[in-house]
Image 1 (tube, rainbow, N blue to C red):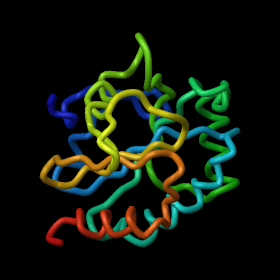
Image 2: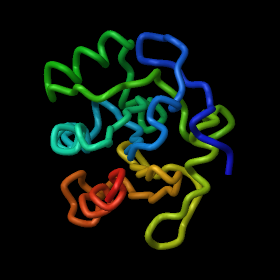
Image 3: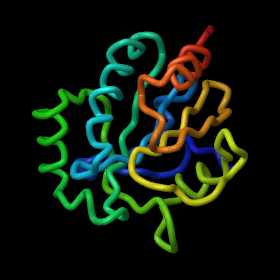
Image 4: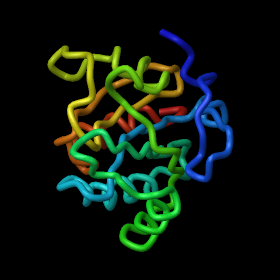
Length: 163
């Protein structure tokens, strides 16, 4: 598996970035969208950020418009929507593709991870979640797994540095 910490990404504002600053922490990478039936999951993601953010954990949002064009906004519109409606403080990155020929290299790596039923491959929908532990191990949660789901919360707590 490629080192996800070295894959170039861009912030929502378009600045070059990588996951390197998060090395040694627990990260929850989520493909997000503003006009989806699952969009209220932003509230639960922010709650996880609030609860565990000072313990070596962060949520990282990757807007994606591939599922029924449910993230049509500009970077400014996405940032405003997330801030105004959900008080999002976790980092958001540029809009990317998570499936198909244009799949971002980060998601090339993440989609190799099987879910709880042993199925790897394409992202099913918005709000699919990948928990990356400090040791680089990845756990995949499908979109219908809410941020407050006990299995996800337990996994986050187990992935915290020093846990």
